[in-house]
Picture 1 (cartoon, helix red, strand yellow):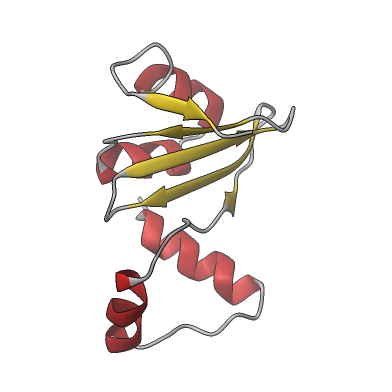
Picture 2 (tube, rainbow, N blue to C red):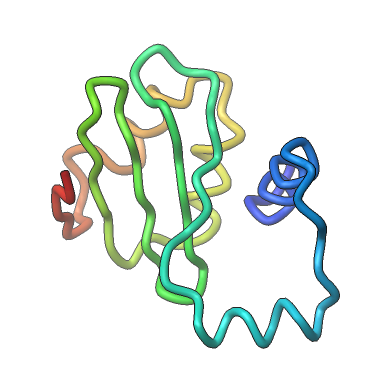
Length: 105
């Protein structure tokens, strides 16, 4: 199973965006504000973004609503992004769960 970071690296590479060194990555994390959207293969969910530093998971649905879920462990984000059914994993792990959330658009 791929980690979220591995998926982000693949996504960046596919967009011809360079991969930075570990030192550059650590420096950039100090100013990191918004997670990178990763497109997913789902009929309900368009993009998933996760910031392991703040444990914030963002989900963008195809109807253009976007939600931010707080205090989500990286293992859960990895399960969702790698699931055969991203929407099903979202329903299992997040929807109706114990995560505080905010609709951000």
